[in-house]
Length: 200
Image (cartoon, rainbow, N blue to C red; front, side, top):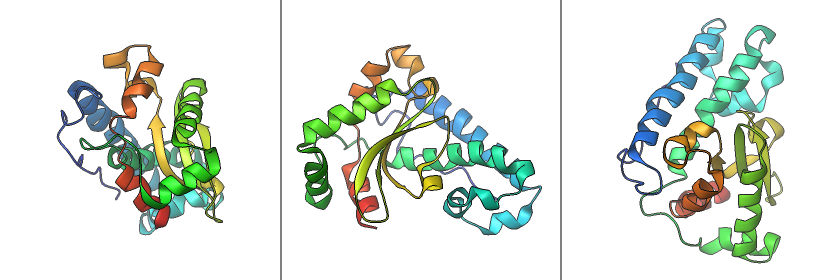
């Protein structure tokens, strides 16, 4: 069975950028919902519990057709939120250092240009979805966006940084002002986690 992880910090730890009430609803309701529905789907083919969520999403074609869409949607939601909480930190924000900064500058020219392109991807994602900084199997990085809970790893890409632009991620505090939420997000990005994901 897949388990809902605890938040790595208190519900109010990201205030005022991400409010306590949003964190409670996002983690305890939405993330829990994805977890429960993923488990419910896989119970029909319990041998899949022997695989990691990365293995499952990385080879969706191998998932039985009767549960594939449920696993794609709820497995993506489960996996993405597991990462999302760790990609933020009360001590986050600022600029990255080390190798991840070097590759960002190499790919985008400078850090501000990267922020601009990432924010634009998040802003222009139509409807629900995510914007991602990802790494391919050559080590090259790029910015992509995905709809709903479609996962980068299904296309062989490793997520390094993601922002959830489903309305449930920001609506209680920012209402329909997605740009405001994206701007606030930069103040809590956990660059240590992004660096860890890049070099691993």
